[in-house]
Length: 400
Image 1 (cartoon, rainbow, N blue to C red):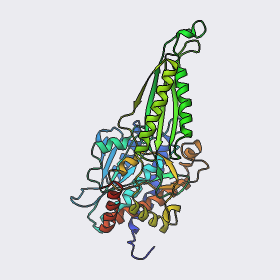
Image 2: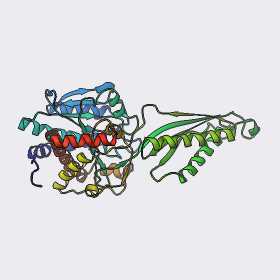
Image 3: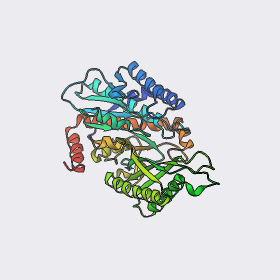
Image 4: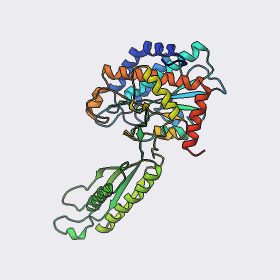
């Protein structure tokens, strides 16, 4: 431990004391995977655990059935308030392949660590644990932002398991659209010339976007899923539907690529005699992650003290991660979203990662990272200079 740092031993002891119970809670969530906005079991399990352990819990918080907010006893006015965030939704078919069961208990662990020190030392500060549903689609955090969940919060932190350790992940902005082509039915054998083939339009659009990707910047990602391509092979399809994800370095990049994607779809519709409609998912644009450098470095130093050193503790990493609605939070309050490594042989969103998210080694890594987050949170709550530097960095990034 470097000289001058406060030793938050009470936080570490509190997390160690709760680790076994939290691991059982994590495994229970892992065994009951639930998709976005359907996290009923996870919501009940997490809120019950917090209530049993002395937290004032608001279930179904901010108008969302599977969100929650937990506060520790009576909050004090006019003092710093820190939020640690939990996620707990799963992916279709492959369950907790992004390790959200681990994220859920990392937030609880950090919260109890911070609370233990605040109460033992009589520190005038507030800690909240926020349960944020629907990260894998639906933008639960965006809805919570809109409902006022972050209005009086000064900083927000969360963790995410990964194959690698990264302090400041390169999180991309993302938007989602549904593209519907409309044509005209005809008998595919007797009179195909009488139809306008919506599936042909879909295929042309898919190919055009594939060519567009070759001319896109390295940080652009576009991927698609076909939802409907017709009813029977002998009927010229009069309807076909694609879903696109468009990712980019920031919102401006996504806006530019969205316009170019729409042009591809309009061209495909015209070429096949079809019509097209493009519907973007309003209120579900995930922003890029504005990693707060002072907070990230504070976390990184605490992490290093615990025996972990991410490569970008010394220099900025360009490691990509995908997209998350934590990015939206980072444009509202100073925020961090470090990645911590668990022993998986493949990356997130794979069956191997699902299995890894239940291992003892992964839980051990989770609690180490949660200890670093609790200590970094306590540093922010008790150090006015750190709070000012974090806010100054946030204001500089956002042009304030």
